[in-house]
Length: 412
Image 1 (tube, rainbow, N blue to C red):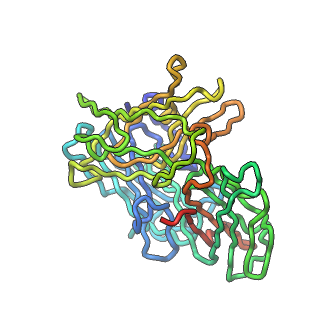
Image 2: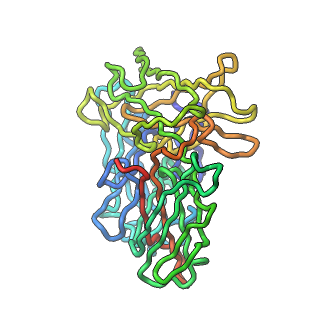
Image 3: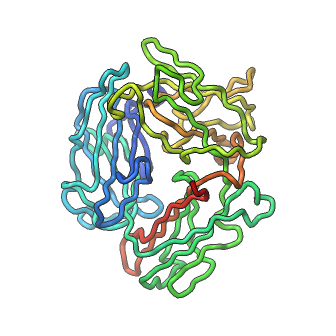
């Protein structure tokens, strides 16, 4: 079940500046602000907030994993700063907090890290990439994870409204926002960049560089056709906290030398009416009902997905996405298609817990991923939107993250 299509890490492999797992035995990567489980990995500069980062190594035993962090630009490229410019303390350290699994069929080692810590502390705001690698060798990457440090110099007011385009009014949500700043911003057209994202999914990110209006102390972004997002549909979900009893959306549990969970068949909801379901906007939560420690007592199971739907076009592939796989369209998340039965199917190895997921179609001809083909899109859908404001001061060598907000269109 481990990603057989992936090639083992070769000497000299390079880190990429995104959330990525480089070795097939590394699973269940989590990264969030310690104040709330599975929150976005954003910390306030010079606060007591901490980032919790963890992963499992299915090879078991203990390994010498090192880590470092690197400052990045707003579009996730190296900012070319020296570690002395953005770090207090050491430039790298070893992950020393690990525990072995207990009572599970699949043996694994759970590694955990908190940032900032006594060894490594970011000292400026902006985008950061956490890099984990083997034996102190950055040429042997294991995991990379994006996170953010915000220096709250600006507040962001957000308004979520129906699309201004008549044809999209019942399917899209438009985001209008205002950046309210205390310090003067000399030229917002060149010095300020604002990124809007839906449900923390990097695939949805829209970059804003030209405001609609500039007023003393505030900058408005509300152009007629800007920041228009397909609202999509509520996430599907399943519950594998227990392997003794069938949770939500679980049709069968098969136990042998390994454990496999078969989910009920999903249908294409593109043509159905909107149904109000409570979801977690794509999140997942590691839980198990048979053990005491979610980190080490939860087992790994093969989860079988089936989608009853025809191929939208001849040249494309269907994928399963959620925060559990960083919304990535890769070999591990790709589904196979059975033309005779008109259905997609796949199997993913996952740790016990609660999961949100969606089906996405990637058209190979256009290269565009579409979340609405199998799910539909309805203005009523509950989504959270993230707005990041970056400011590059005149003469400065890096972009500061001066403002951030995350807002839902639903009040629950």
